[in-house]
Image 1 (cartoon, rainbow, N blue to C red):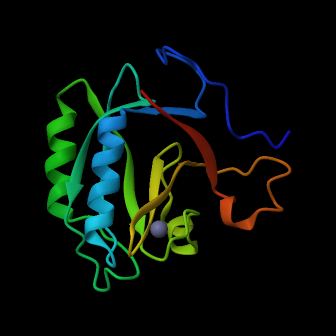
Image 2: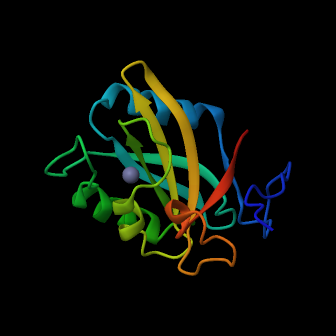
Length: 167
Ligand SMILES: [Zn+2]
């Protein structure tokens, strides 16, 4: 079919539609502003949702990028990972994804992103950035299996593009 945009669902509650991801305009702007400020380095963090509505991101955790070369890649501060997973473990929340920026302005997942996307269903929000600020935003869901017909787009092989809906 080739249609990876999904169907827009206005209320976004308990929908089996995995292709739509909801993010408030305020949170989206917050992530984009942080990404722009961090340029030319990559910024990164985690996306948190309520367990009942895993496709609706309701808060984000900004992390320090502890990669050896933050100009080219990112590595979420392990202490932030530990703290965040500990916090959500006994709550009704869940870590549904991560975000990072691409200072080279490319909104597509990189080869190294694909190599690291080993958690099936995990969301990857990518903010393309340049010296003038944030450019495009792309939301992807890591997929362990490729759908038939996706072979022609090598860069999206293990990522399914999601429709990012601001609300
Ligand atoms: Zn990347």
